[in-house]
Structure formats: C-alpha cells, structure tokens
Image (cartoon, rainbow, N blue to C red; front, side):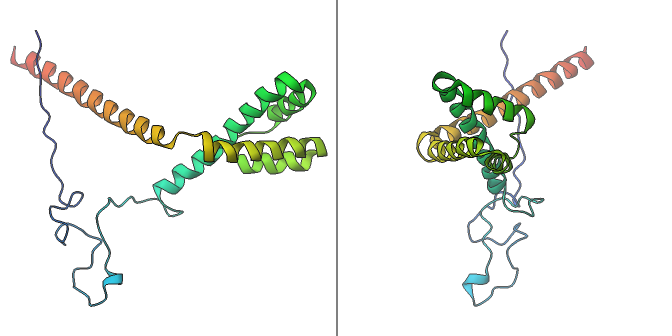
Length: 173
C-alpha cells in the first residue's frame, strides 16, 4: 500500500521577507529611514554568520582553487606517465612527501626544490589555470550542487516522516 505525507515547514519572515520594501523581520536593515540611499542595507539574502574571512562563496572558491591544483597535478601526472617516465617518477616522489591540501604551498615548495621540479610546478600552474578557465563546467557544478541539496533534503524529510509515522502507528496500536 502506498501512502504519502506532507511535511509543512514554517515560513520565517526574517529569512524570507514578504515584501521587498518591508523592514519587518529584517534585522540588518536600519529601522530609521535615512536620506542617503547608499547607507541603507539591502536584506534580500540570508545572513551567514561565522565567515569573518569572507563569504561562503569565498570559502567555496578557496576550496575550488585547491581542487583545481589537485586536478592539474593528476592531469600532468597522466601526461608525464606516457611520455616522460623520469619526470613522472620525480612528481610521484614529491607527492609522497608533500600534501596537496594547500595548492599554492605545494607549488611554491615544488618550485624551490630543483630546476626540474620548477618546470613541473610551472606546468601544474599552467594546467590549473587552463582547466579553471576553459574545461571546468561551471553550469554543471551549479546544477549538480542544487540537485544534490534538493535530493538530500527530500530524502531526509521522507525518512523523518516515515520514521515518525511508524512510531505514531505503533503508539496507536
């Protein structure tokens, strides 16, 4: 037997203002009207606390920056493996001793290791830039991230409703 349940989520006026010109529920907009429009804060997005160093987008960009470095190292390693096994071996040895967690630190250390490592590091910089500008599918990233969030939210809400409705049924019996 198939059943469906609807989970009503409360609407929060402080997150979703009801009208665009409404001060009600928006703690970041000055309560007194001022003559100077430029000092008036717009509250059309959610406030995200805890990002003193920048926005969530800046944090995501930093993570992507390091990911592009990781991707570039993998691309360069694959290229070297087929046409320059000696350079490939040097890159693999360097990788075994140095972390890829911080892409810039990795490349800076590699540049100072030796002249051969310097040329490998420059190739990695070139590849990560080209990959970011030309090959990375930005639209696909947005689509996939949105789909993952929506699918996960739906699954979590469905699981919760099933869990609570089964518990409710057991209590009633």
